[in-house]
Amino acid sequence: GAWTAKIVTLFPDAFPGTLGLSLLGKARELGLWALETIDLRPFGIGKHHNVDDTPAGGGAGMVLRADVVGAALAQARIGTPQDRALWPVVYLSPRGAPLTQAMAQRFAQAEGMTLLCGRFEGVDERVLEQFGIEEVSIGDFVLTGGEVAAQVLIDATVRLIPGVLGNADSAVEESHSNGLLEHPQYTKPAEWEGRAIPEVLMSGHHGKIEKWRHEMSQALTRARRPDLWAQYLQKQGKTDAGEA
Ligand code: SAM
Image (cartoon, rainbow, N blue to C red; front, side, top):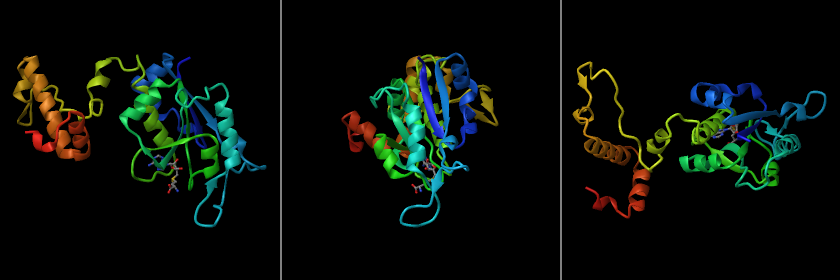
């Protein structure tokens, strides 16, 4: 079957959200990928279907219960491979490993994945251990819930699935695919508010255009992301001093 995202959430209405639009929405209609939500609420306890309770040891807020989340994850597991390389199980969390393009590539190569969206102060730690869950963060800030983060991760992943992007090249040449940020882009009109498109791009000389783009890519990466630039140089076997 098609690559599938199974999303465990208290707010299934948040999906597909932006994933239903444009290229990703079309691709989903075409069956290139699928999305399934598993509502946490029916797994809740008692007549009010409570899903959360106060933190052991005290403190502010509420924590999603291990038994409730565990039951939802057990349902999500039905019919999925147990090998985490074939079917990653991810908890979106500000404590997680930062989401990268390489990670999205790994997820895109699996048969699908399960995503657990947290709320409140998060989920009982035991459920993370029990299900061999990896934690992934979309950045060093705190969101109210994991739903937006899950959409970010799914968006980054699904666009790497063969056939989803119209033009296969666009995923090869963009920012982060080669360790560099992308060069500036321009389109019509040729002149706007007194600003002209760089001459080389109008020259029709493909060799010169490629060279210019690569140089701009390098300059941008060096100026904006010294961390990526250092990694890039290391891969090329160079040091910053050796680079003009
Ligand atoms: N108490 C948690 C902590 O300090 O690590 C934060 C919980 S946060 C208010 C609620 C939920 O939002 C989390 O369980 C997680 O699913 C999601 N979330 C918040 N920030 C996130 C981030 N940077 N990346 C991914 N998910 C995030």
